[in-house]
Image (cartoon, helix red, strand yellow):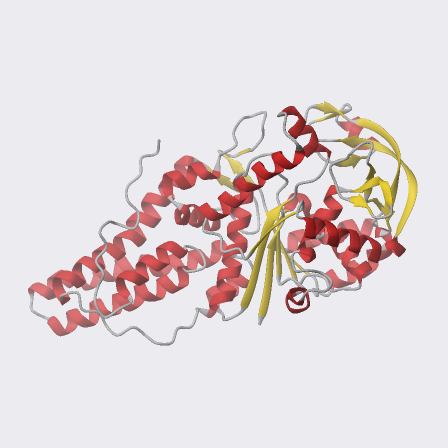
Length: 478
């Protein structure tokens, strides 16, 4: 089976934040699990690099837009490496192949495009237009960027989004286009009930020069968010490459809740206009608050994901954000919660079980291990939770098994069996513990690949590889 998984592509006007890191990690779990299942997988991530906001930021730094996007895109590539993301592709919307394919797609949907004069309020920081009601509510100042809205009158190309309203609704209602969780499915259905309006999909080049030109009309550039959506098929070589034919439709597209309208309403309409299938599943994750407050520039409470990994390691980062951020809702990060998770759950529970078992095998069994099982099957219940994007619940189930490891040691008291000379029972007890640890290592593979590999290295042979240090060495909070 061929499986294609994507994240949204972060806009490079700022450095990576916790939301980007969590989204990369979520998609990676889905990809690693699919590979364990035997699927051939393409996991695609990337960066969104055009638009007026990028040109404006580059100019403020005395860089060309290309120089600026080169620098910023590298930060996201570094984040993926740091988090051990197993992506097969990294697409940049400044890639020449993407730009050429976007222009071909534009030509292919010409029947759904038309030109009209447009008048609306615009914020460069959002790269978006706003209604009179929103502008009035905010006293004519964008609250996110602290700058006045601009009244814009211009002639743009429009896409016939309204034409596809009912077809999109039918796909979502039937779950042919499955939106997870149900709360987000209901949210987009409510929007569709109100009715979609046609949307502007270009801007005058005189206003925004850093973008992909509209083919046949050099006075216009394709709106940044519109061409960015197309990355999900250009990365597969739409329309002529075999990867597109083999891997589309996407099995999962992973996005944040702030861009659900683009991915659950506009994106399906574009695909329908092209005559191709919509993704199978759209998973919409929530936001991460910091110390129970929304992350914002004004509060200065953003957390650098690299700083967390530097302190605790990639797998501890992955564990915290997959288990302690609710999969179907918003969640909260604090350094105290991170330290508690690391020291108690990872260190005292999993790390302790591994270390104690390894030492007892060395001391009581002369490092001899039972024969590893040749065939392995992933737990169906946990697999089902992963497939339904319940990563928090999946790790809860795994951790019940982790806690049982230490309880089993306390109940069976291998040290007492050794002192009493009950060698036969001692072998049975420790072999049972070893098999349980091997199984947990397999269960953890999609979530914590490095830790999984280390546990397997220790116990998945005929002779113990005693670790030189604990899996989770003590870390100071500061």
